[in-house]
Image (tube, rainbow, N blue to C red; front, side, top):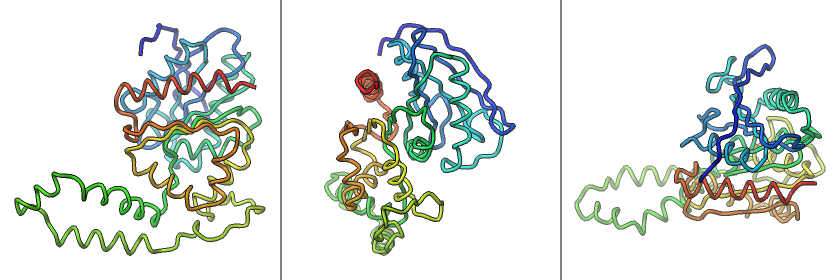
Amino acid sequence: MSVMQHPETALVLTCEGAELPGILHPGAPGTNRGMLVVVGGPQYRVGSHRQFVLLARDLAAAGIPVLRFDYRGMGDADGEFVGFEQINADIAAAIDAFCAQLPALREIVLWGLCDAASAALFYAWRDPRIAGLVLLNPWLRTEAGQARAYLRHYYLARLVNPELWRKIGRGEFQFATALRSLLALFKQSRRVDPGDAAVDESATPVSQAVPLPERMAEGWQRFAGPILLILSGDDLTTAEFCDTVKASRRWMRLMARSQVTIRELPEANHTFSRREWRDQVAAWTREWSAISKT
C-alpha cells in the first residue's frame, strides 16, 4: 500500500463528561461524506497490525475524510468500559466532532470490525446522518452458536491436519482431554439459544433481553442505506455469523437485499493480519465508497 502523506490532527472528543482521543484525517477539502472507524474487541484507534491507521491514510489519500477514535474505557479514553452494546452516545459524540471539524460533511459511513460491526448496526438506523455501513466479520456470539462453529469448522479441520495424526502416532495426543472437550461442545451445541426460536419480525427487539443475533438483524432491517460486508474465510467468528445466516430465513432475506455488497477473503484471519489482506480491505472500502454515494 503506497499512501501519500496527508495532515493528521489529534482531537479530544467529549462524551458524557469523558474525554475521548481521536485522530482526524481530513481528506479532500469540501467533501460531504466521511468515514468513522469504530473500534472493536480489545483494540483502540490504531487497530491490530496498525490496520486503522493504514486504512485511514489510504482513504484520506483518495479524498475521503476519516475519523478514528477510542470510545469510553478503551485505549486512552476516559471513563469506564461499558461494552460494544452501550456506545451509541460515544458514536454520536464522535460524529458531532467530525462534522464540527469538517463543516461540509453531510453523510457519515460507519466502518467496524468484529463487535464494532455489531455496534454500528445498533446505531446506524437511529441517526439520519449515517449513509452507509462497512461491516467486517460481525460478532453475533451465542454459546450454542460458538459451540456449533467449533464442531463444524475447527474440529473437522483438525481431522484432516497431518500434524494431529503425527501427534497421535508419537503418543502425544491427550485422548481423554479431547473427548471431554468434544462432548462438552456437543452438549452445548444442542442447546436451543433464545435466538433460535421463531421471532415476530413485526416486533421491535431492541432491548438487551433479546438475543444478540435478533437485535443485530433488527438493526440491519431498520437501516435502509448501502452495506458493504467483508468476511474472512479463516475465522470462527465469521463461521458462526455465516452459520447463523444460513439457518435463518430472516437473515437470508437481509443478505439478499440489493443494497448489500458482500466481499470474501477466503484465506484471511479475523484481523486481516497480512499486508495483502489489509490492502484488499482498504481497496474494497475505497471502491465501494465511490459507487455507493447517493
